Length: 76
Image 1 (cartoon, rainbow, N blue to C red):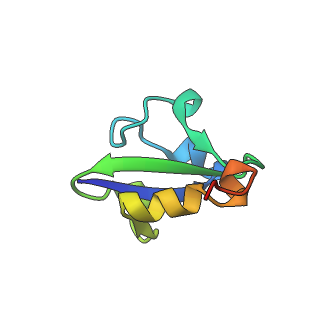
Image 2 (image 1 turned 60 degrees about the horizontal axis):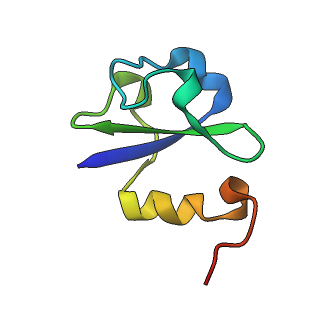
């Protein structure tokens, strides 16, 4: 099962891409203002993400549907 974490874009330098499903800074999903990114991983929490709020797939989809991430109102 995938787990999702939102981190500040300023933390990108701390990401160990061998421990998450993204492959580089170029493959990250940013919010509209490019101040936050979503990371996903399977299994144990990578040490650099410990203590951060984790989300399920359905929870992250709700977050990504907000105007902070999508820029417009989600369709009904």
